[in-house]
Length: 60
Image (spheres, rainbow, N blue to C red):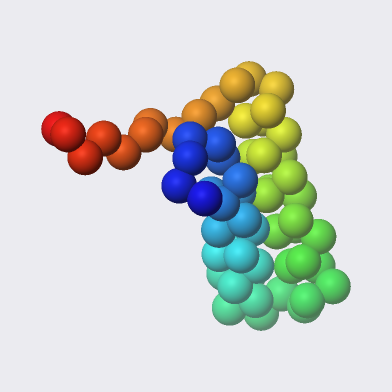
């Protein structure tokens, strides 16, 4: 879960964007696909371009 892969970050982006779009009075039918697309694009980009988050090093 705390590894360098970007999957939790993508899920958080999707969740936060859904909540944000809902607070802007978008319907769930519109907010959900937009949020899912954002999460998918981030995760797919991470896979395609080998993007990773920095690892936590407790020794530092």
